[in-house]
Structures are given as C-alpha cells and as structure tokens.
Image (tube, rainbow, N blue to C red; front, side, top):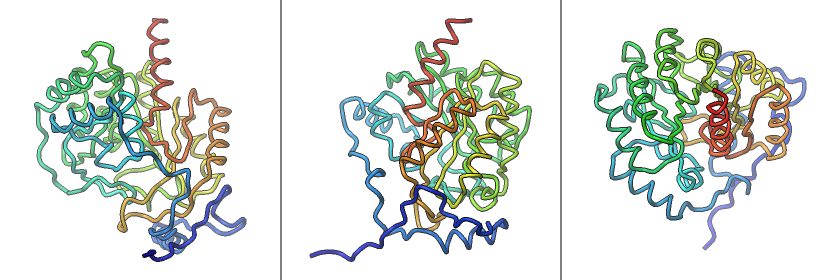
Length: 334
C-alpha cells in the first residue's frame, strides 16, 4: 500500500531570496521568514544528500570500542551523516564536558540545560586512555558549551589536549566553545598546542541572532579565531558555515572575507539539515554545483583548504586528509 505523496522541494543553484527583495534583519522577522519559506520536513531530500549505510571492519571496531568506553561523540549526539566515512577512515569526533549544553542554538541536536552535571576532573585522563585504544590517526575533540563553569571549561579542554598529544602519531584538532570571547580562556587552550583550532561562525552575520544562542555572536567568534592565530601562529585555524537557511551569495562571500580577515586558514561549508520539528526549517537545498563554486571562491580568497559540499561538516574527513599532510610538512620545516 503506497503512502502519502511527499511535497516537492525547491532545489536551488542560486540564492533563495528573490533579487531585490528586502532581507529581514530582526530576530523575529528572520524567524517568521524562515517559517514562511521553510521546506516541509516530509519533503524528499535530493539524491546528493543520501549516504550509504555505514559499515566495514574499522567502522565496527570504532563503534564497539566507543560504546564500551562510554565516550560521547558528536557523530552520534548531533546525528552526523558522515559517521560511516569518518569512523571507517580512522577518525572520530569525541565530546568533552558531558553531553548537555548550556546554550540552545536553533540548529543543534545536542540536548540543553541551564545547569548540567559538574565536570568530571578525571575526564581528560579517561579520554586519552580511551583514544589510545582506538588506533586512530586523527582525533577531533569538541564539547558542549559550559557557561556555568568560570572559564567555560578552557582548563579542562587544555588538559585533555596535553594528554592526547602524548599519544604517538596522533594529530589533535579541537572545536571549542567561544568561552564568551574571554582572552585568557582562549590562551589557555592555545598554550596546550593543539594541531588545529576550530571555532565555527556557523552562519552569516544577519542570521546569527535567529540561528545561534544569544550568548554566541558573529564578531565574538571572529575575535576568538583572530586571537588564536595572532598569539599562536603555529596552530592551524579553521571555521565552518552552514548554508540553506536563507542566506544570500553576497552574505556568504562577506562571511568568507571576514574569516580570512581573522586569519582563518581552513574553511568548511555544508548543507544545514533540520534535526527535529523544534529546529529551524531548511529554506533551500543547495546544489553540488553551487558548493563547488563556493570552494573556488574560497581558494581565491586565500584559504589554504576549502571543503565545500552538501554533506560536509566542520569535522569532515576531506579536510582532515589535507590537514594531516599540512601539519606533517610544518613539523618537517621546524
């Protein structure tokens, strides 16, 4: 018996905003605009957003080991579509500071609460011990935001980095909170010398108030990235943009330019996918051709590497393959 017909969906290779139409700028107007233009959740996704079922020997080993070690991974908590490719390729993204965030961004699938359980002081040691058993080449460490902790968890993060860096042959990328822009917290992480430091701008300036928690900020993110690059120039810096939320091409170009101005070297762009009915609707499914054009535009701006595609996420393996070679080359030049 056939089910109900799903609504069609707009697949756009150009901006979803009609030319000359005024852009909403207030948080309320942006939210209303997204609801009005959003694609129904029941709509079929285009073919380029479909991924094969995860599997393979290395994938199974990572999955079983993570389960046995009780590690939180953003791969699972945020329902990442690339879990099969990353785990199968020897990469995982693990979460520090628990699985509950103090912020409530309207795109993120991680659960939230104003006062999560206290930090476990042994977590950095346990994390390093667990990662050492996984046989990974590259680890991405991210975390929830912990605005309830005095330094936002920077000291906790730094201790984890130091312990992970002691594992032979392991490259360490961190995707940290913005620590409310606190300079000392950023320095604490920088002094631990991660190989890669990422902080995501997430969306364009105009949409930031409607997409991100009020405690986050477009300029705050740029400031964190700029400080890391200025004070710790040997650390590779990275950021990520989601698309499909009603931004214009001009706004994407402006965001790219702002990130380059902050010294960011690695950029990822990927399609926003709505995790639940509570989250913001998708306004547009961007074509692979448009992502390819943004990749070339990013290269022209001077980014060392741009990973741009519908399923690319901030910890996408394509960027890691480049970064491994880049970091090793830098080490040889020292």
